[in-house]
Length: 356
Image 1 (cartoon, rainbow, N blue to C red):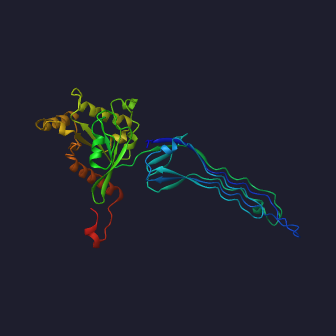
Image 2 (cartoon, rainbow, N blue to C red):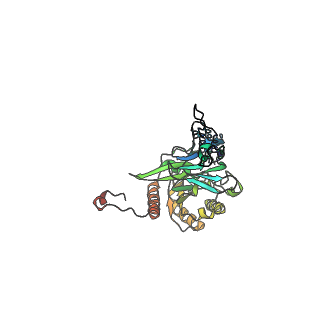
Image 3 (cartoon, rainbow, N blue to C red):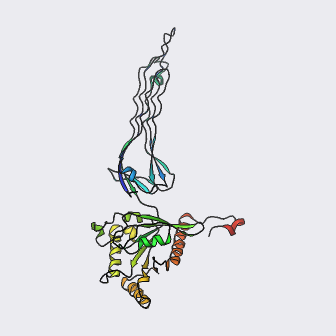
């Protein structure tokens, strides 16, 4: 399936039906009185977060979505039927903004969440509504109200706990394939990954977190070099960034430290908030470095990069060092989740069975 993370749509809720002017016509009933019914309301447009979707491709090729209008009122006290509603299914993590003003209107963050994005117009009143002691034969009616019409921009930001950051061919896709069930395309040329991949990493029973692998960044991405930084938005909702560095590049003239600094610079240019997120350094492809040079190479890299945070040494291909890394990540994510939601109170009778 083609990955699409941005789309523009036009939506229109249904107009309300018009009220009706009608009088009761019956034999021997000279003054039957008004019996014109109200019009039906127009159909609403709903958006629902569907956990089975992961792309906005459905809206790339079908731009206009209209709900049915309400039926008009009729004589004999018959009210018009309401117009049919329409429901638009969108992936979890979709942001809905007004295409003209840029204002964020809604965010779909929980599976099954349903919101009304355009309200149908109310039906008009028939002359039955205007009957009074003074006016026994009213001939007034009101038209139906128009439904809401909007031009919307849909933007998908994937919901992941951990985001992978690095140059093309640093081993991000190999890492996500090693620790999760995700099976991204892996090859020995740059920009093998062309769209984000999500993988669920299971640490133990009922212990898991979600990792997002995005296409590699290169220097000048903020000016549009490579794939630009169009996919960096998918890291904005993560709790932790893993900066994966290739310690054994194919080209010996390439300096991993200069590349790592370029990535950090691009991150800062794109979004200062993203730059301030917790970031761990992961040195990959240790299986390609001779064992006697390994310690000196790692120490030299950390010193020249002026890195003060956590450092992990792994080989995504042989899975060496991956186990301690994913356990540390889970502990970090779990601690942040507990800080956000507060400590769950456990019944003292079931302390031994409580999740840790």
